Length: 295
Ligand SMILES: Cc1cc2nc3c(=O)[nH]c(=O)nc-3n(C[C@H](O)[C@H](O)[C@H](O)COP(=O)(O)OP(=O)(O)OC[C@H]3O[C@@H](n4cnc5c(N)ncnc54)[C@H](O)[C@@H]3O)c2cc1C
Image: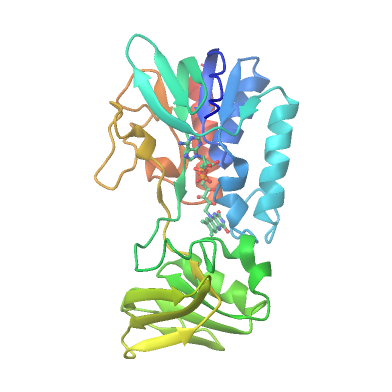
């Protein structure tokens, strides 16, 4: 089989892993001060790209589309000279030097900042993997067009679950809310809601057709074309599992008050630290770390 040859190693002063709002903002700030900066990761995989209309962001207009905004951010960062690749980092080696490994390349960096954020985890119910992208999606604002006028359900138990259900109400025929926990402190008009949802099974021939589950309201089987998994994002730190960088019990990177990780010359900012969960707070990390690094 044809093997793509490995690209030559890249040496850089700063390497930022993660092209969400935290990583892009920091990359731009460092580059504007004349430093050499590489940025890794896909802005389209960032949370803001999947957020839809943004709420409670101090620096941009309420309702700004997250995808448009992150596209503008990455364009500006590249304009000032940030070098960018969408490659995913698969591991970090910290022996004599810091080596950040991607599928086809190695980056040797003097200083590394991890800003890999968080993403929607799989819920691990029966049929979830089989019907992923065949009716099951983790991004309502990306995939709503495929389910226009159809019956769909949204599953999770987070503020983002509620928002996704309300968003889909504007586009789908019928919307079910499958709330995973017992407690629900809001009600949504025209959305049939089930609580304490468990024992979920997704079924269909080629694509998703039905979902059965147990709930507070009894055993259910609903006919749906789309099921949106929209819960609390989990930290993207799997690639660090063999590294010496310390994580807490939930998988977030442990940092001190100056964003330093347990390894010298490696910092972490944004949602991957578990200390932020919004646009403003993630950007605030970038601003604070830029000040530290530019002293
Ligand atoms: C549905 C939804 C709606 C939201 N709505 C709002 C809102 O209205 N207002 C608000 O303030 N906040 C909102 N948020 C939260 C906000 O989007 C996040 O807190 C913020 O964007 C976090 O930014 P980040 O840069 O830390 O991480 P992320 O946005 O998670 O970005 C991480 C980046 O790292 C990349 N990455 C991950 N692993 C690797 C790897 N191994 N190698 C290379 N790159 C990697 C990802 O592809 C991505 O580019 C919302 C989030 C979601 C999910």
